[in-house]
Every structure is written in structure tokens, then in C-alpha cells.
Amino acid sequence: MAFLTLNNITFAYPNGFTAVENVNMSFEKGEAVAIVGQNGAGKTTTVKLINGLLKPTEGDVVIDGWNTKDYTTAQISRKVGYVFQNPDDQIFNSTVYKEIEFGPKQQGLSPEVVKDLVLKAAELVGVTKFLEENPYDLPYSLRKMVTIAAVIAMNTDVIILDEPTAGQDYPTMIRLGEIIKHLIQQGKTVITITHDMEFVVNNFEHVIVMANKRKIADGNKRDIFWDLETLEKSMLKQPHISGLSNSLKFGNQVLTIEEMVEELKDAKKSGHVQKDNYGVVV
Ligand SMILES: Nc1ncnc2c1ncn2[C@@H]1O[C@H](COP(=O)(O)OP(=O)(O)OP(=O)(O)O)[C@@H](O)[C@H]1O
Image (tube, rainbow, N blue to C red; front, top):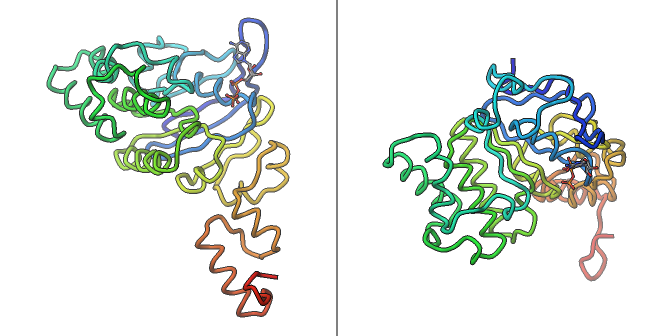
């Protein structure tokens, strides 16, 4: 049995709106999983069901043997950490240090252990030099990193990142990739909602696609990003390089620049690609 399972989950908000319908998902320990899909597909609702902020109307969420229906949100937060989509919904302390310290302190750990968790999490996300600053004096992208550190410091088995890439520059995207890799190496399960398909290609193998309240695909990134019918249904675009390869009608399912270069070399060798006088592929 997987470490975390969603068994036929349906969820309706108190106003009666059903946001998630008959969803099944499973996540292993130590894997990174990307959840993609259009706005309103039900992604955030699904991850809030995983961390116990919401409880399913039908079906069960089971984490390491715990059915979320039998535990409080506070108890589940020891197993699942959730980084909010908007950092301003999460931050409430007057310094970065206090913000990161809050979670582990609540867990009743010794001051030395708490300090160690805070400093390590701050170092990992790159906010060490801002520890005494007020988080609200920092730009959005750093506030987001502070919220990620605050969740990492809680040392939960599962970490959920809700759109960590939104509003981030290229170096921060690279850092986010390194953070995810580090967490996976520590055996954490990292579930990430993102609209950035390049970020998915660079950092994940397992991809889940949601559309219109349901899961419509679940598998390896190469299969997902070359399943054009599923992409169309979910109104998602292929990663740029895959789209280019598709337009050029290359046979292999390209996902990366390196693979594209190989395809171009092969095509040139076989005479399928020629260059004009300006060196442009024609
Ligand atoms: N508190 C709420 N009460 C009623 N409906 C809600 C509530 N929160 C979200 N919804 C609705 O549920 C649906 C799914 O929302 P959800 O935030 O889960 O989608 P999403 O895939 O995460 O979208 P996004 O990428 O925009 O975050 C949307 O139609 C949304 O308007």
C-alpha cells in the first residue's frame, strides 16, 4: 500500500459546490509528484484534503495508516506540511526567524532542536541573512521562500507546495528544484502544484493531471506530455521543446533541450534537416 492514498474522494464546499469528484491518487514515500491543470480544476482543494484543512465529503484520505477523518488538522500537520499558494495567507510573525520557528516550537521539541531545524531550513531556501527582518519588508519571492522554510522546519513526511513557481525568477526556480531534490533525498514526499511545464520536466517524473474536478491522467511525465488528447482536454500546453519537436514531426518524444539536440543531429545525418545560406533550419 502506498504511503499516502486518496480513495474515491469527493468534496463539496459548504455552499454546496462540488470541487473534487471521485478522485483516486497515491503517493510513495520519497517521491516528487507534480499536479497540473487549469485554474479551478480542483488542485488546491485536493491538496487541502491531503493536509486535513478539509475533510472529504465522500471517500478516505489515508496517510501512513491515518485516516484524516479520525484526526484533527493540528495532528495531521505533524505528518503533512502545506505551503500556501499566497505567502501572505501564511505569514503572521514579526521576524523571519519567528515565522520559521513557530511550527517546530509547537511540536514541543527542545530549544536546541528547534534552533537547528530553523537554521537548516533557512539555509536550504536561502533566507539566512534575513532572519531578523520582518517578512513583510521582503519582496514576494522571498516571502514565499520564508513560508517554504517554515514548513520544511516542521520536518513532516509529506510537503505540499502550492504554486511555488508563481512570480519567481530563474535563479529561484533553480533553487526550488534543488530544494525539492534535497527533500526527496531525505525521504520526504513532495507534492507540487504548478502551472510551469518546464519546471515539471526539470524536476519531476510522476505527473497528475486534473481537469474539471477530476483526475484525468496520472503517470510518467513523458507519457503525459505526449498525450496530446489529455493535454487538450485539460487545456495544457506541451513543454516548449516538446511542442517544437512535435511541429518538426520528429519521431521521438522529446522533453529536454539535450534530447532535441540529439534529434537534430540525427535528422541532419539522415538529411531530414537542411540549413539555408543563413544557417537557418529549413
Ligand atoms: N471556499 C470555497 N467555497 C466555494 N467554492 C470554492 C471555495 N474554494 C474554491 N472553490 C471553488 O472550487 C473550484 C476548485 O478550486 P481550486 O482552488 O481547488 O482549483 P485549482 O485547480 O487549485 O485552481 P487554481 O489553479 O486557480 O488554484 C473552483 O471553481 C473554486 O471557485
